[in-house]
Length: 117
Image 1 (cartoon, rainbow, N blue to C red):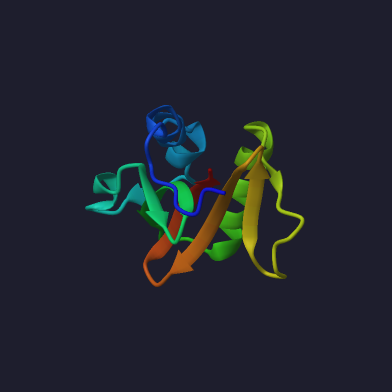
Image 2: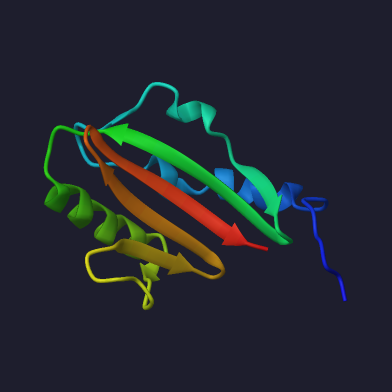
């Protein structure tokens, strides 16, 4: 039994996650937060779990409802479906073995895509 794993061989997946169109989809008036573009897709291996992920943060002067409506439509058009295991109030989607979360912060919101390898 393999007790520890690392990120060897995940380069293609890291590239795939970083190229997802949903990461660049945003409501009108949303702008990429300075420094967000520096959170490049990456792989991490912690406690034997291998995870490929990326995050984008956007500043947005509108409402949470506008953001939610945008991502519900954009995710559906891009083949994502609502995460059946999401907690009430969470804005979470799944596509294959990838998960997309929309998290709200004081100045806007963040998108995180995670793939468990």
